[in-house]
Length: 452
Image (cartoon, rainbow, N blue to C red; front, side):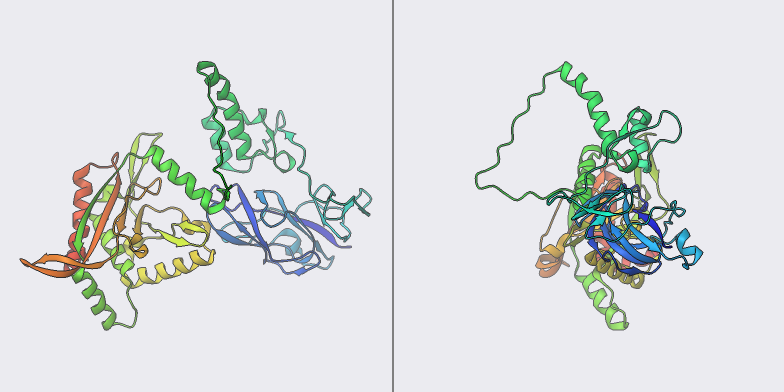
């Protein structure tokens, strides 16, 4: 007799607590192999394909495309035959790179096929429902949508139903006892929204007692409009930029530089070798050299300890515009790479960003960001620092402009460089020294030879 195993949304790492179903890759009744991708989900970090650790026949799917599920919620069920290898029943342990599966769930009652999609409590998303005896009974038209499970209070003793370390941290920082909460997730799982709602409810009465809150209704402009939910990548970017503006006292300085010699050097390098060096790679090489001279800018502020933490590795983020919004892939150990290696890694990460296949680990852990907004045809910008980093270098377009060169007016390739920095980390002298060194390297690439 076949065993029906339930596959739940695995922990995707990086503190992620939920994911949105973008596209199902299998249908009910399909035969899947171990580690075959079954669904494409979008998290706040990236779009990833989730492979199933079981091999067998898909008997149910949970959630339509566009539905947001918390970590630990059921994704699908698979009927595994009696002759299936033992390792299939136990899970392959390869759900996502770097993250494993838990042990196989307990044996479940076999769900017989029907015209709908079975849910974990026996309900069917579609035109029927499964009764306790396993028979499919059709529901009334329009009653096919899965109802949310009833909230389950946390036990008075024993383990608290929390998966995400982020949820625990929010509760700890807010002085909230998780055992007093009622989780709204599957099987009473406590979600981030539960903690945030409890914290808001706790402070709201005190605030209202102190001073009345005047709420003004928002009147939509005539003609209506289009509402775009701030979720997924766009929502994560919005949260991060808002936090940066709230927490970081940033300042910006800028300078124009003659990039004519840098462009000539790149042309000569490309003529001398088979591998074409990108301009972004040369700018990244200049950044890592500048950070070696001004290491305090490769740091972050630990607000709890009131300390500036200086880092010894440069993980260089770079802004990439995609159809899904702005993302910042990270080149690991950029300080240890040459121009060819940087060119190859920029190309790989850019292609993955546009395809939506970046792994969560490729979008986190940056220590400094390079923002080439010149590709949009603009000269300058005051970018928002990529929290919790301490600085960002912005590069405008390189265009022919009148320039005084060797005492005479000439047409040169000019670029505007902007540098935004956390004023808690350094003063203007350090920031100006960094930017001036970058400009000197742009104008005279031979300056880099001193640090090679």
